[in-house]
Amino acid sequence: MSGSKVYTLEEVAKHNTKDDCWLVIGGKVYNVTKFLEDHPGGDDVLLSSTAKDATDDFEDVGHSSTARAMMDEYLVGEIDAATIPTKVKYTPPKQPHYNQDKTQEFVIKILQFLVPLAILGLAVAVRMYTKSESA
Image (cartoon, rainbow, N blue to C red; front, side):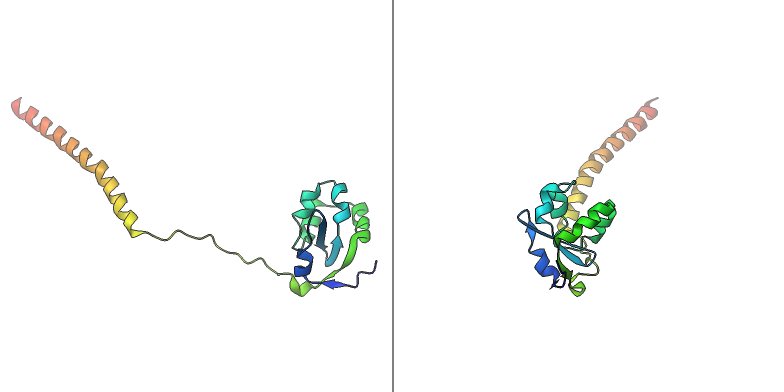
């Protein structure tokens, strides 16, 4: 099959189910739907690589030359490289809004611990003072 058709990542991303699965590997688009059942790593591995450039996923596994040769029969075209994001945008996790009211709760909890401790300390000090005077 001639790989002359050029697809955008958005077009390829629509093919992301067990019944219709396309992958982008090495700048080419492959329809691997018929291969899903035969894939040694299972169909989930392929389905998880849809809607993105799966080149790194493919290379990281270290496919054999036989596996690479098999790819030709699934080739449907090429990817428009301009439609692939060069870098995934990092979105920092949302931080909870600082609540000043919680600060008062914290102070109250500290005081609930420290006040009885101070009273106990004072009682021990008074007891020791009165004991030493009577001796």
